[in-house]
Image (tube, rainbow, N blue to C red):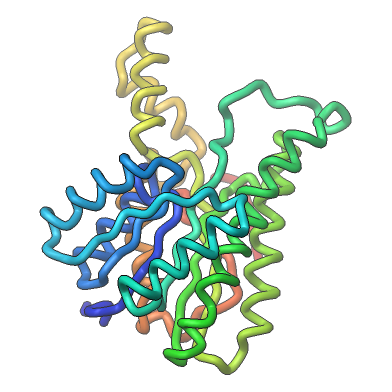
Length: 266
């Protein structure tokens, strides 16, 4: 299937690693010109160069902290000047979950929640707000927010709140933009094979004296597909949602974690 992405411009925040990088690579492979946004300018430039070489598309690496209004505005101005604006935004810049011990809900700290919300919720909104003028001008656009299956379960109150808030943001934007040709969707990855997760699996295997395969199988015990999805597999769904082919999908959240045993979502 031709995703009809040739010549479109996609901005991917958190685009130098993990799901963001996988999405950026696939969008470029499908014909889009891509802007990678990262807090690290050198890393953004390096990865952009790699993708340009690998895909033959124009890939621009930009540094921007998505918690900073001025930095996001400057990023959007550069996209406008260098790429003529963007029609696609993939919001994937977020503080990683699962890096610290999870507190009980009654003991969660406001500072931690505020930091996550500023990055993953307000950061997503800042980027959407900054790039919407070019989408409105084009009469077409796609905004895909990377949230997480933490929105579907308890156990990490900060993770649940931030991910549910991303869904609420996306749906409110989708309603606001009704009839403009701009669609807003959310994807919920679960534990996904990325660079960091692969390193974590290898470290756990060494510590526990088990094989990498045994650790992976244990971590995927409740995943219906029988293994952890890869970042590239999640990116396939993102690329479809970023395309004109997804015209009937808007305002919804889609699980891309491989299926969760026992869960009923409707």
